[in-house]
Length: 163
Image 1 (tube, rainbow, N blue to C red):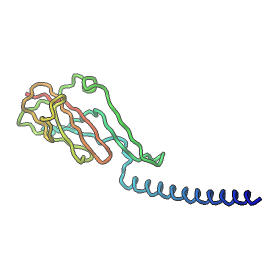
Image 2 (cartoon, rainbow, N blue to C red):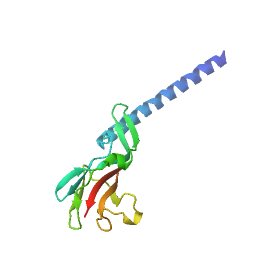
Image 3 (cartoon, rainbow, N blue to C red):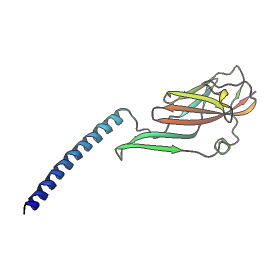
Image 4 (cartoon, rainbow, N blue to C red):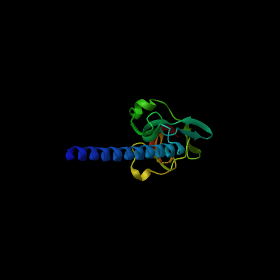
C-alpha cells in the first residue's frame, strides 16, 4: 500500500515539473518569434541586384544563395540553399552593355549587404574586389558578385561587352 502512494506522489511531481518546463518553452518560443519579426527576417531570398552602366540599369541574374528567414506559418526560422543552372544556360547568349575604361558601373542592391566582392567568373582570387575591373579583359565577359547579409549569402552574374 505504501508503494502505491509513493508511485502516485512521484507521478504527480513529474507531471508538475513537466508542465512548468512546457510553459518555459512556450514563453521562449514567443520571445524568439517576436525578436525575429522585429528583425524583419521574413524575406525568403537575397535582395535583387541592379547593375547600372552609364545610368542605364539592368538586373543581374541570381546564381544561387544560402538564406535564413523567419517562417510566419511555422513560427520558426527556416533555411534555404538554392543553386541554379549553369551560367551558360542562365545568361545564354545575352550580350551585356558595351563598356570601356571610361564607363561608370554601379552595383545597386535592394538592401545594402554587409560585404560583397566582384570578380570575373572563373578568375583567380587575386582579381577580386568591390569594383568592376574592366582592364585585362575584352569581348563578352561575365562577372560574378558574391554578397553577404546577416541572413546569408547570394551570388549574382551579369555580362558586359568590353571594348
